[in-house]
Amino acid sequence: MELSEKCELCPRKCLANRTGEKTGFCGGGKDVKIARAALHFWEEPCISGEEGSGTVFFSGCTMRCVFCQNREISRGEAGKTVSIERLAEIFLELQAKNANNINLVTPMHYAPQITAALDIARKKGLLLPIVWNSGGWELRESVGAVVNHADIWLTDFKYFDNSLAEKFSSAKNYREIALESLHQMVEQTGKAVFDDDGIMKKGVIVRHLMLPGHLEDTKNVLRLLYETFGDKIWISIMNQYTPLCSDERYPELSRTVSDEEYSEAIDFAIELGIENAFVQEGGTVGESFIPPFDLEGV
Image: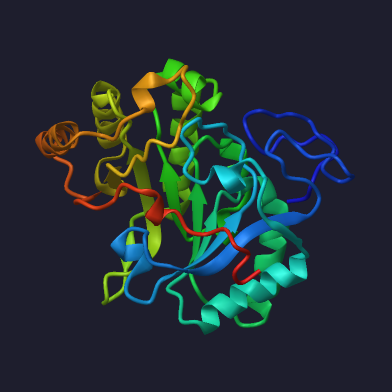
């Protein structure tokens, strides 16, 4: 997998010359840019555990979610460029801190550089599972191209209604594209595997962040995921939406998800028969859950 003079790594296929000085719609160019590399304790329990997940936050993103909690890095404003060799060292440094895994947050626009760094790190003793932490709106071909470098997929399925995806994330055909890429993730990863401490070593976790006022879309997402994949995946139903969007065009995003909305979503999941699930309890809303993008570990 190599950078292209006409980049087609994501569904936008913006055709930017990533081998030169140009950057794509995602903000990614020839060099990798990251904002933080540290132990992270706020992922699902089977990812973070007590030791923490060795998380690398990459700058830039192929989506434009108006409610993004990581806006500081998703828009490419924060971060520092590092070489492929330095990225490999970072992976090994996180392993030395007893991380449960290497957790790559929003990595696909840097997939060629990341896979090269992982190859270097493996030769130098990297043994940890690799978590590919994705926004979900990925090309099936790009997912397949990293098959030998992703042990766990921690991916989003944000919307059922494509009009919401276009409105809030500037992402066309979201449902169809995310579903196709998820099929590829499940096919290449197989059934989830956990160690004796309950830490995932292999598998697929699909996150769905509930948005206020869109309970029916959440129900449609849950139904689609369960009817399509059954217990082949784990579903993480999240209530942590934090109203950071100040744009007056989206007044419905100015509040949190109510307890009633979340309870109804969980009840619906139970009625469907979903058992492989993670749910969140109180205290998940707030900017305190957004890590500081202060170049720690970079």
